[in-house]
Image 1 (cartoon, helix red, strand yellow):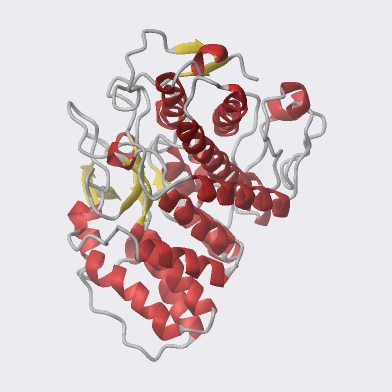
Image 2 (cartoon, rainbow, N blue to C red; image 1 turned 120 degrees about the vertical axis):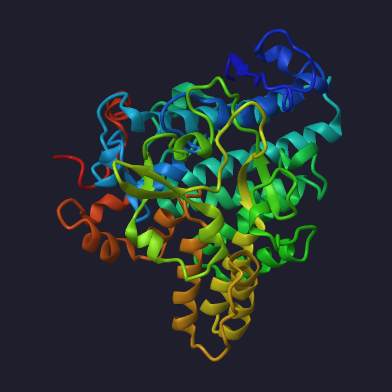
Length: 447
């Protein structure tokens, strides 16, 4: 078992007033209050990391956009992602994505193991915390497998065993992700265990299941799970300006950004440029918007620099004295577009268009597409809609290009001097390869 579980100090997560920010494992499960603090610490680690690149804090929205055809790094800080030549020198910036993600997985595993012998924690809370920990583990393994391909599956805190684990296949990772999500679904209820949708309930798990089944091309299962969300206690915002508000009705799961004194916070810190451009939208991204799309008016802004106008994602407010936005992890708009794609793949183009049009008309304030398209035409429209709806958001564009097999064609045309087909996977950092001989580098990075 891990010797320590780090607790998040943000008051909204840390319900009891604990003076120490780290507790010995024996103390973590001394009461319901300390056990809740432990799981809150896990969510805090998503956002509080000050490492340059990690699973959350907005960096995946940036790095995914740079790797795809969505963003351009005006600052040249992460130009290597822009040209798909991700560095893998020991302890380079990419190291922290791998390291931090596995660190949180270890914390989730520590909670699962600690709850096995926690007589002072109530049974109902044990069930809840197990469900949340299974969900977190699945969520993180999902992102790792999509960035690196096959990865070590870490389901315990046995360091000696984990330190020499080889890479599981992509299929094996997805099998574990589904197993963990199904366990979480069985354990969690429809009720959120905390205010503001900050901790997962059953609907959060089902939203993730729908996405995972989409990536696995299990169309009927993806459709069935999205329907649970669409028929659930959520609704699309008809005012696009409210989609990222703290109390909006379509958020399924969100996290509190790290505090305003942190070096790295949420997407707002990355994208809002101040006096000079930072990560700006490409011409390809700008051209994806229809004329008069309300999302362009609301989610895209400009900064002038040396008599040139640059466009950037403006979904996210810069952090200031007060926090008016949380980091949205899962939202209902995605569920409609997942169901649209799943239905189109099942040769239900008109039903698919109904779902697509729901997002297009409410968020984009655009006319609905007329029925009568065939399957392939609808799939093209869904793909276009996802490009606009998820602009600058959680690396969706990068993952969509990869999972649909479009990355090679799209990015070789955009980046002919640097793109290689093997760039669809990030390299494993050299420090990991040196410490674990059973790990093999991804193709294209051995030169």
